[in-house]
Picture (cartoon, rainbow, N blue to C red):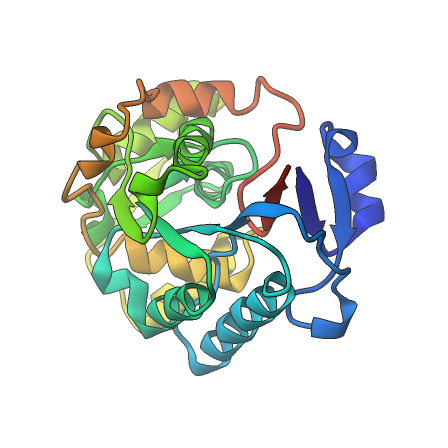
Amino acid sequence: MVCLVRDKKHFLNHHPNAYEVSVLGGDLLRRQSIDPLPDDIDVACYLINTYTQTSEFSALAALSAQNFMEVLAPTNCRQVITLSDINDKSIGNSRLNVEDILRSGNAALTVLNTSMIVGQGSAALEMFNTLISKTPVVIPRTWIKTRIQPIATSDVLDYIAICLLNERAFNKKFDIGGPEVLTFKQMMLIYVALHATSKPDIVILPFLTSHLSSNLRNTLTPLSFPEAQRLIENLKHDCICRENSITELIKIPCVTFKQAAKTAYQTPGAGSLQNIPLVKSN
């Protein structure tokens, strides 16, 4: 197993499983900084998903994917696996363009569409944690009834493992989600019950203007701008699985949102899916 990271020293010092993989360094936005990949790669996982739909970030998303495919081209890679959004309205042309770039090589592409990924270090839990740490908690009314099918990070990893070199997953897109559909309000109340030291006051905004949206992005620190913007865009629409063809490969007994949110902080150093492109070799 090979892991490509921007900062090798930081990764080796802070990730508990760092010495169980071969670590390569490189920034996907700077082609010349990327260490050469070994030839005997079977599968590459492209897990960078936090770019927004502005023209600037769209260009960076395309550049990152293009550089990834260029360093992958000399290898014997047979499959690329990536994550995308279930909701077409929130994907935008930027993400679809990234998928086209990942599809342009010789390797088969497998796309796993998710809504909200829940686990240690995930943007979703960072958002909940940040919201309840401030009082009052300010939430737009449009978010309250938004229906989401969250999935635990561990279950996403299980689905990726199932798809590895599985020819039935080649050149396919699948929706994956947890066992329940919850409203944002239900998830917020579950998270408050699990982790808040005291019940916070909640203020419901009647509508969300561009100014209020900007303030919310600033509130959702320590999330980066792309992460906060992506979460806000996704919460404008229901994000639930529209098909379950992945179950034709295998059905995973996924954990609930409550289980995922509870255990996320009980597993030190579990890490995050975000911004970690992986490659699997013999």
